[in-house]
View 1 (spheres, rainbow, N blue to C red):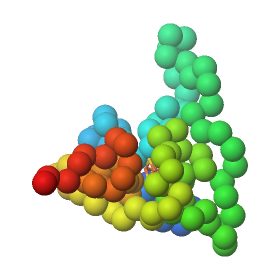
View 2: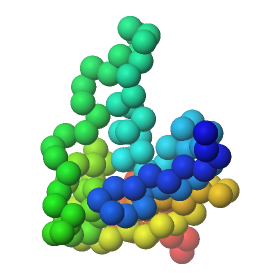
View 3: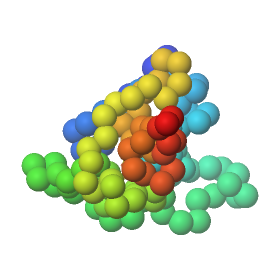
Length: 114
Ligand code: SF4
């Protein structure tokens, strides 16, 4: 139906990319949670645990830093302090996550070259 997909969370773009690449390897934790919540007819691939905990925050008063941090499985202290921006993560793909920002302070982010 669509060649490109945009994923939004709490009024912001979380990730944009070609549909096939985004479905094969989602870059943003919210996209990962959305895709893992899809029902499967295969009993061996059923979701046992809810991929997301909690309720969406109030969009009129969003959380500090990354808007997804209260619900993100990869949240680190820096995620509540710094708001991530959309950055390229692969050809034709962008994502808003500190994990993909070199030197962001997130423990999973690449380090800046010295
Ligand atoms: S910036 Fe932090 S809280 Fe936000 S999506 Fe990335 S890892 Fe999760």
